[in-house]
Each structure stands twice: as structure tokens, then as C-alpha cells.
Image 1 (tube, rainbow, N blue to C red):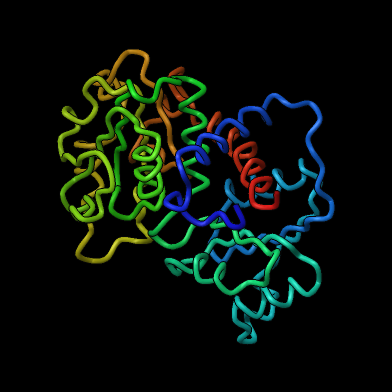
Image 2 (cartoon, one colour):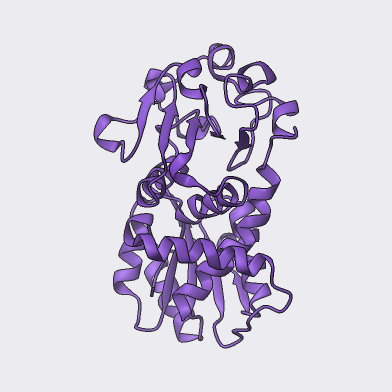
Length: 298
């Protein structure tokens, strides 16, 4: 695997191998070491979890890490990202972790980089967030390993969620039993964008007998004027609370890719409750991204 760009590039065997590798790395005492493979974090959008976990993943693997300060880079002088990558490649950087608002940009970058260089997609616009989908599935496999028997509910702003896009692809690839996406009509994806599962505007229907609930952030920064939805109404009809959580199975796990809008899409006592695996997702993000880094360089 020379690049990691989208779940669609993976075979089922490759996806399962990445998940297994992440779980093995989680139990490791001594990690493998790759000091000859420097990594550059190129984050053109804000990030905490993804950027820091990629940095920690590289550090665990003894890969030198450069966090480019884009506010002080030649980007402000008009340099293109292609030229930035070419320049850093000439300095010996081998792997570029890219987050950008332009959809499909990591794929275009991968087509143009020098041989032996690697592009990892850390999120591109509303299109994809493949490493998040993988770490989410690692967490699910730890708690509920029989994917074919699961009902997974994805709840919230599905339309604007690159996490939901990649997660759909992964559920299809790994043959998850049932995937239901719950959203108000205005935040539902177009039918041709539904890769797997089905969509409903009914919280009761969507959460019924769910084994896993993936709660999504309301992405106010991506909403067009025509996509605005009253937050009080949203909370009343779609928030994950202790009451609505009871619609799912008693042992259902609660997930959230973060950052969390507490008191909007999810209540504190659910996000921090016994059924929550949100911090486990964060922890697994490091090991999943270690597995991704290993896979692209080997």
C-alpha cells in the first residue's frame, strides 16, 4: 500500500489486516522502529485528535515528525501545496499526512508525488476521513467482534460528515449486518450518496435494537443558508440522551468521532456514561494510525 487515501482503495483483506495490526500494536511493549522515514503533518484545517494522534503514532514508530506551521510557511507567499510537498521531499521527508478542505486533493497529490513518497488522507472536505472510519471499526471490533450480527446506527448531520461517508464504505466492505443512518430530512445524503445501509428521519426506528450508536457532530461551519435547522428542534427530535439511549439495546455502545457539541447532539451523562467508548476511540486512533503508517512504508 503506497498511499492511504480512501476506504474504496482497500480490499476486505487489507482493511481487516489494518484493524488486526492496530490491535496487535495496542498490546505491544516494544514497537518497531523506522527512523529513516520522516513524516510531515500538513494540516490546512484545524484538528486536535487526528493531528496529535498521527504525531504520536509516528513518534511511537520512531519516525521523525515535522509539524508544518502553515501560518508561517511559504503558503502565505503563494506557494502551492504541490511545491511544498516537492520541497519537503527534496529535504528527505517520505510521508505526508494531509488534511485539506478541497475534496479529492489527497488523491491528486498522490498521483503526482515522486516515487517512494507517500500520501495519507487525514480528511478532505466533506468527502472522506478513512483513518477515522478504521479507528472506529477497531473500537467496535474490541467490544462487539461479530460484525455480521450487528446493527449500527449513525445519528446526526450525515449530509456534511466525511466520517459517515468513509464509515459507510467500511461497513459495506466488512459486511456489517445492518447500518442505519438517522438524520432530519434536510441533513440526509442524496440517495446516490448512500453507499450502504438505509436512511431514516425516525429516531425511534433507527435506534431500535441498535448494538452501536455513532453520534455525529452538528457541523455548523459547513451549513449553507438553505441547510439551517433549528437547534432546539434538532435537540428535541434527535439528541442522544439517557431517554433516547434506551431505544437501543441495553448493552449498546456509544461512539462519537469528536469534537463533541455537548448539550446539542449528545448529553454529558451519555458522552461520559458507562456505555460510552468515546475515549477508547481516541486511544485506538493512535494505534490505528501506527498501523496505517506501517502499511504505507512497507
